[in-house]
Image (cartoon, rainbow, N blue to C red; front, side):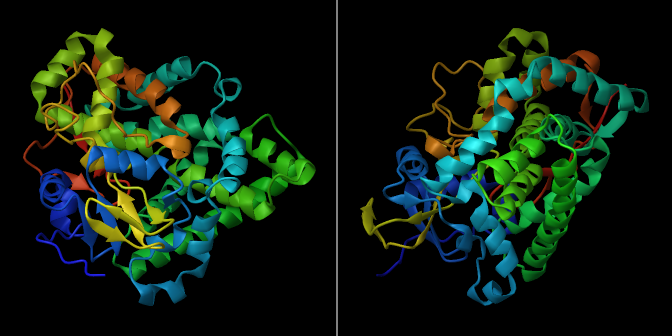
Length: 406
């Protein structure tokens, strides 16, 4: 079947990574169901199509681990990486997804989280105390990453001192899951998976001998006594959570802060009106779309907006495009904290809604509120410097964001 179309956009290009929204708008207008030759995926850009791609498992399967390898000649070198991806709950359809997601949800249960708002408030103040007198910090590393990562590590039962190591592994794993046309990047992700898995085997052995009141011990018990998952699956879910459990929160906080710097009237509005923080963060999530393009596999032959999609072909429901669809959002490229309706898809939809969405919605308003109270004069250290994007198609975010005050 011909995949000819009247527009070409390389969604793996540097231009796209730096600012995908104008290019996604072109695709949405010219070819809303668009074949990306570079990734070998159909790209869905209209809100209704993206929503269906996220929710309709009868047409769009989540068993898409093979699609992260964008070039066939890479595949033979990446068996361990693809196997790791294939065991993640986010890569499963029901009933396997329900089984694994049910276990993962325990980490996000209120009994496990306790008073998450108080924990976020305490962590935010502790992080600001560490840098306040310096008059500057890297917002991404010192705050946007650190706050959700610290809280998540404590929920899982990991040592806070290990966070730099987990972050280094997580960066490589996230990049390898970001559909990159670079075998070295994919191999680095594979090696990071191996290293993290080996470390976790030791952690699991320790919890087997001396259980604690934490999520790792819970999974170990379900493996050894409940028979609900294998050891390999225990390790895979922990790799998924440790590599990506904080990513959504981090990307919303970081990209959101950059957007506030670029629209200073919104920053002033938020600082002066903390009572709108919750709705403002929902709008920031829509505006930033932190996990911008999950992947599905066509579960059947289908026709969508006149295009023929064959069973087994890769499909990207592009959340970043849906969240700026003018048919749904008035003035979609404007950050508007007072939208009457905001049915954004920033955290996905259906059974694969981001399990960390509750955490993100709890942590980010607290993080911004504490930041703006403690550092009211925060600004970009070099406002003329280009933004430092991570070049990750799946999880677009900033690598660094130097800020200053005083």
